[in-house]
Image (cartoon, rainbow, N blue to C red; front, side, top):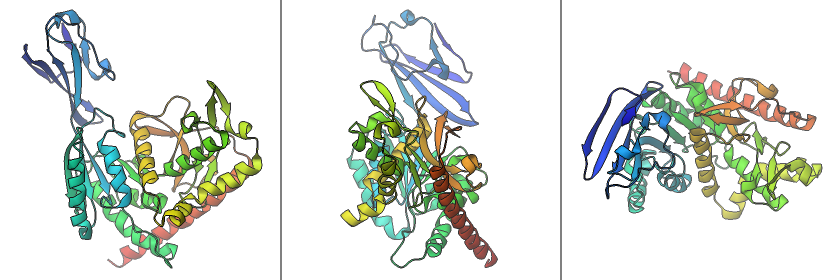
Length: 412
């Protein structure tokens, strides 16, 4: 006998081919649809459930023997819409493939990709669409290229805001902020108008922290905790440096923290890091046992890594930035493992004496798509001084951005 825990259930049965059950259920007032399918290649085989099937989602089989026509449960989800801005650019070129092949939202989650860029890049977008189609990716149901923010952000569940004005030679920081305020004001307004209200917004384009602040400022109907700036690239860089130093796999290193701004004032912190060796978890700082390295070369290498990449390849980080964006959104969407935390730029509540009302990178734990700042970590005086420095820079950026916003409002 089949039992389902929700109403609004209907199903159709074809005993020779498949049984299709479709269930509607509510999640934060946003309705989604899921299908469970029993295929019947031969009769008399025992029913089995696939990895990832969760009876709490509403489908419960009390007596599999009564379903002797099937042997495998197949689960399918309705497609979700994902937008990537700056979609004709370098980072997006790597990022789009990673998303479309299931590395972020899951190997069983179909996707509709929205590719948003500025009008001069419309022709390039068409080429990107061709490439994605030619990849023949099973999860990719549709690709929508557009230069219209309202179309780009329509009904999206997640947004990767990659496109931003790059800093040019001789450009002052205030000029850079001014140019990006205009970009992220428009995107924030579009998100507010047409995106899903539980959309997860990741800002990659620099200055990422302040761009995220501006974007959230213009999307008041979306919770502020749904806006985040990417410092995962810095975390990945720091984790890789520690793994190299210890001579272990990067997958064995965890809880390396990036505090503050995604800039040269960030503070990469290995004091709370852990690593596994021979199935034993150990402290990173104790194993390295070199304070001068952890406060000197390690910090400087991570802080200046972006500039080092540009100097070497004459172009900014793209592949590693795309990978970091995937890592960031993957963990936000799927959660962190028990006892592990990751770095995200989020609105500060003043934790660890950070300035409030700025996007500040903290260690966070994630559950059910909600992040929580890790509490109770001990900071030494050196760390506190670094957090103070990066916090002051973020306050300056925020104030400069607000002055640009005030100036633009007075000119209306």
